[in-house]
Length: 236
Image 1 (cartoon, helix red, strand yellow):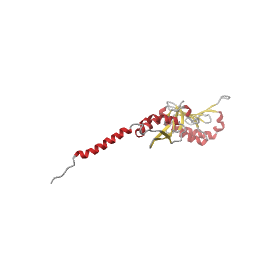
Image 2 (cartoon, one colour):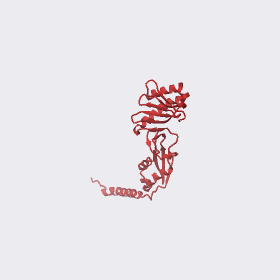
Image 3 (cartoon, helix red, strand yellow):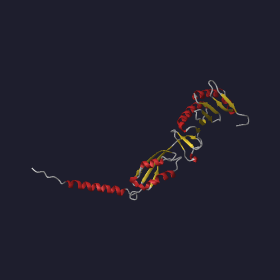
Image 4 (cartoon, helix red, strand yellow):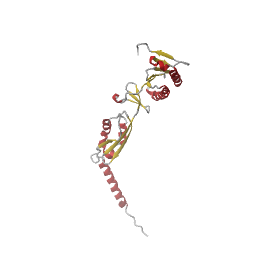
């Protein structure tokens, strides 16, 4: 009994035609003028980032066209804008690019020109975009997260006496100094900072509040007490 076999060429020829057609379509689609991107739509409420910054970051990628735009590269470019925390890019047929960005939230000013975000990241935006009413942090950049921890712990204690922190300084050897919103400088040193601040809070409630306008600084680096520096009459 004989079995007829379909020639191999009759099987592979249609597959070859499909493959060649597909590759031709891929090559054809790579030309941006065939499937151009025309519009950038920003889907975010912006406060610190300028629309022009987003446009300038995205438009150089438009020459790739709709299908061949490198979304990851666009996201990476957008994240180089100082105030951008995250960026999301979505293509919408036939020619739109949707951009959503989440801005960083400022925690404090850092040094002369920097900002510390609530995520503990130091960045350097345009000076005119930095909010005015922020506490001032100064210290080693490697200790940014530690300074944030000190800030929140001390701020919670100071809330009991209605005070906040205007500036916080951490020296290279780890000594901490803060300035309160009423102008009093508090020298905390390197050790037992929360315990020392608790001592100040008790003393402030008991007697120091009534004399706060005369106090220049309070040095808490003592085992059982503290030292007060008084303002010189006529000198603020």
